Length: 459
Picture 1 (cartoon, rainbow, N blue to C red):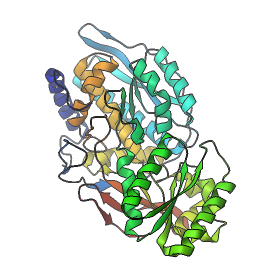
Picture 2: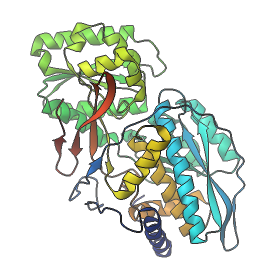
Picture 3: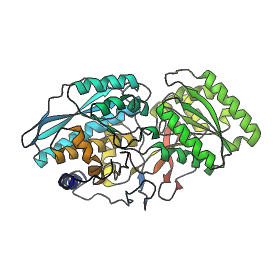
Picture 4: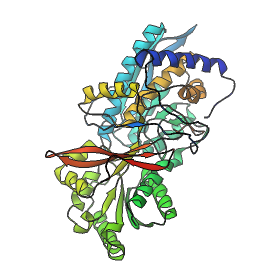
């Protein structure tokens, strides 16, 4: 999925189109330049992009399946080109799913305005289906849309869903572009799965380095038992042990669980033993999950020992609106200074424009994964312009090259050989209580290039 030979003409077209798109959507070419790194490998950038805050949102929506009718005509694409969107509008990531839905609606509007100005013979239509944050439902929705002729998809958001649909997508040559799947196990070169976010090979060490930065000697990991949770658990554990931190495997729970009394009781017992060994200020909990954190925190608030230690989260709970809406869970999060990393967008005029428009729609700021969905829609469209074929393989063959020459709402989209985002900084979000209200606040940024933390304030 890295740079490919034999596509010079297509890439030239893509570069021209990208430049035109940047001029049209970035204020006449007046985007704020960012310092970016060499894309040769995810481990050797020369500089780190600056970052901007990107909070999350909550809403619900209903979608209907739409018949795909667009086909390439002589001389290029004509008519309405349908792109599938597999989003968790309900279930454990409902607020994230709604954010991405709004971002894709904005992308569809912006892209079609651009296509009209460019005199293109086609327009795009993004067809959204609710996966309910359930892998089996996601596969059913993919199969239904594929049966209607849709070949290119944005989403799904969870690694468990991507894992579920991967074989079907590969076998049927359906292009999948996830904005938020991060499991390292799904980083497979040559397949039909791309991811516009970095994998947990970066996030895992970030969490471990946070524990080290706070002087912790031991952590207990409680995690969601699916492809994403297992992968991030392994990445955190390996990195923490290399840093000399004792790691205890806490409860690994069923993703379908709704009640966590036994799991939290076990966690409290494990934390109590470590507190007796090191002291409360040297012990932490790493929680890896989705919006079930509300139930976990509500239960954990009943244990004094769990309120005495520091807690860390992940991109699965960063900016989660559901947490703020539950007073008991939110208060616990504030008490334990629940610090959550999530991949950071590069600050630019384009980023600020898209974030501002989405805030108007959502009533709050979007998460970074919604911005990655916006970028995915653009890169797909620019690839379609270059190939002039509604063909998933043709788009796949130049996707990395087009992305490389694109600067979007998240910044420069550099993909590695597995088709995943090669590097990124991480925003660090913590819940706080200000003026009697709970809110997420940006505490700092992990700078990838310098491998260091830049604190706004250190909670």
